[in-house]
Length: 301
Image (cartoon, rainbow, N blue to C red; front, side, top):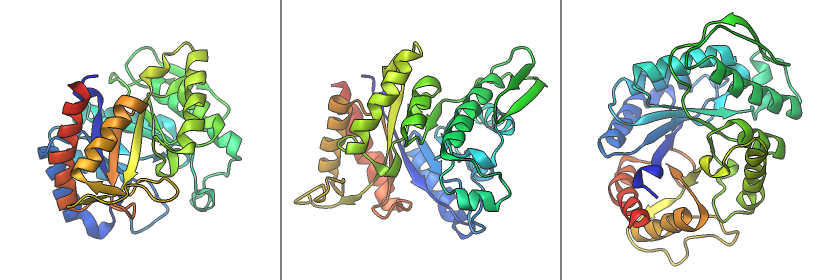
């Protein structure tokens, strides 16, 4: 495996008051060689920065790091407009965009914004249509007419820019199967990791759907949202009684993540703090400067 096949990033949930810290942190990650930063998308929260406005602004102050909305609240962002947004960002930032996509989780709040409520099954159908439509409206070609059950466009010219990679936040069996059919990566829900029951029962659904669609399941990345502490000294136990990762020293992280890549096929990690918030500057520096390079070296040696 190439070291470049394993990606390392960090996640944050910036509010209006967090702008200076956000810029400082992302610029630090950019200098330190991290692959991506991620922002949450909760447009019904007035104190939060809009994810895509923030993504574009922050990418403009960086040179190498990619941006990811983890994950896009598709019910509030019609896919034809989302296609315009992500292809424009990709053109402006030299391809440094990943499209994270979700079917919508907090439907009470989504409906509060005037979006028609969908049943869980219909929301997943709309999610798959949205990914398909974003791809159709990217990469050039003749005008697109699309008549889906949830989304329709008529004679819309695609952007000449390729669609970014699509990573989904799928959880249920139906959305996992959609991921296998149309996505490039999967972010397991609820911060599940490679030893979790959620991963063991979910990933086979993606692989089976991919194979049934004529795709190579191995081409669909698994990128983990991974909360945990980075400690100065080794912890006596790096997992709790339920098997959830707690963190540990840099050496313990390196051992764990190397095993995740080599033994379980992990292809990326997005660090959050132990309370699922943004990692502070010191933790982020250790993640970027100690842990990521050591894992990359270990998996290619």
